[in-house]
Every structure is written in C-alpha cells, then in structure tokens.
Image 1 (cartoon, rainbow, N blue to C red):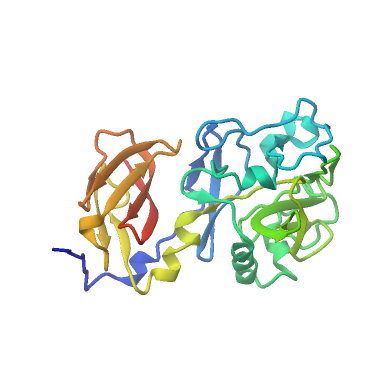
Image 2: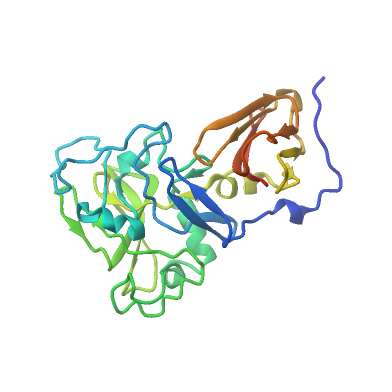
Length: 309
C-alpha cells in the first residue's frame, strides 16, 4: 500500500533554509572552487564560471587561435580566456558561446544551472528593478571596473566583474568596462537573451545577442531557484540533521515513499550512492565534505545540499 510521510509540526522557518554566503562553496569538474551568495530566495556563484569540461568529463571546445573567425559555423560550442590569456581567467572567468552553455552535458556543477531570463528577473526585481540593481550587483571601486563605477557598492554580494565578450570574428571587447552574462532563454532567429552591467550605468540591461558570441556565465543553485519554492506550501522537504556525521534522514510530506529514489553526488559530480524506498541515508564511510542530495518519486524532484563532518 502506498505510504506517505506526514509531519504535522514542521516549522516553516526550518524549511526556508538558506546558505551562509561566507562559508559555502561549490567545486566544478576541473576543481575550481567558487564562493556562493544568497540573494533573496536564490543562491548564486559569486564568480564567473571557469570550467573547461562538461559534467561528463568531455572537453568544451576552443579554437587553436583565440582570434579565429567562427562566423560561418552553424553550432559553435567553444570557450576562450579573454584575448586568449589564461592570466585573465582567475578574476574574470572564461567566455562561452550560447551553444556550449546550453549543451545537455551541462557546464555548471551538479546541482547548479545557467539561469533563464525569468531567473535573472527574479534577481533584479529583488534588488529594486533594472534601473538601479546594477549598483548592488557590481563590485565597488576600480580595481576591476574602469572609472567611474560611481555608486557601485556590491551590497548584494554578487560581485559582478566586467569580463567583456568575444565577437564571432575573433575580436575581444570591453573587459573592464562591461560584463555580459548568458541566459538560457532563446530569443529566436539565432539570438539568445543575456544580462549586462556597465561601469557607467546604474541599471541592468536585458537584450539579445547572436548565439555564437562568447559571454560570461554565472551559475544558479537548483535547490533555491526552480521547483522548491513554488511547491513549498504544498510539500515539505528537509534533510536532518544537517550538518551530520554521515547518517541523516529525509523528511518529506505528500511524497510517495514506495517510489522514492535517492541519489547522492559529491562536488565533482560523481554519484556516490543511490537507494530506493527509504528515507534513511548512511554516508558514514564516505569522505567528509559537501554532497548534493536528489530525491524523486517519479513526479516530484527535490535537490538540497548536505554537509558530512
């Protein structure tokens, strides 16, 4: 007989969990470590993506000359360091074509994704709208941004940096003056939407670019951005205790437990455990660290981090 977990006394505040922006990090398949920040209901990377591989370990392509003209290519999946200089990557990350960003092998770490336009809008709305949100998103001062960068205070903690972009003809533009970040949302006609910030403008700009242009990428946590918050009033999901010694339980309301599947991934995207039909998990024989827990009953899916100490 189908069973369901029901918990009559779960405190809603415990379920609206958030991350400590000073302590949480995420690691991509190359081993690059990124700091994260909670802004409203979303958790963002505080740095531009640097990865050179998809999550399956295959390389994201590049060109033998960073200035190669790719205008004639129909589906170019490439990345570059700005001007082909690896020294630019540490601060500004890499630049990716939209085709690489939306490849089904995924560029963001497991549990993270490239945002769509609606998710960018959630961010800018929370920060007061497009006309002034750029000031709260941009790193203050002129260490990375060209003058004037007036009014930028990075009060959101997003720490936007001006990585510039690469034109399909092989020319790089605007590092230091403007940052451009892809959205996964297709604009049609070979174009896709992006967001940009400029050192001379207080707001956030939303426009579209050809998909073979190369822009920066910021990854967004799955757990906060999609699915969880829309369903929280109808279904409850919590891992406890968190942190733990490797043993924890999953609290779920209105979830068909005879169909439950639990998958655990480490920060390298490797699956370390899969089990069915039980809400008790034992990772005590696994290394200490941060793991991603994915729970599904075939219709609903939830994702959350767990810390093993």
